[in-house]
Length: 128
Image (tube, rainbow, N blue to C red):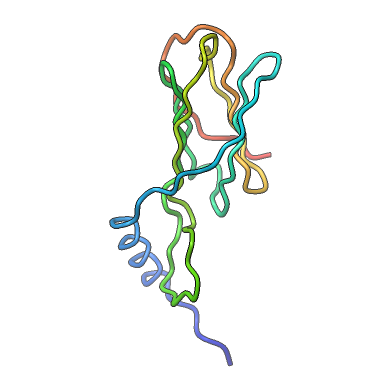
């Protein structure tokens, strides 16, 4: 018989310990212009739309996902966490009138709409 699964309390405690000490993981991005928006695409594995926040600011868009889970495991190789992702992208002039986001198949897509920035906004992505 294989190893037993850790109890919920053990996973929650391990997640809290990891969140206290970990550095946020920088997310790579692809950025391109479409007709009405600047589009940012970033990998966000193992998180849900509720875990992700996208913030539109005066000259940047900032998105992040807090640590979702860090169960007590003994890894042979441990290169990434389930969450704890973060990235900020500078916006070119002419973008910032609004922000939309979606998350599907571990991929976050952020659309920063063309137009003049008017106010700071924060959204959670819609699932696709």
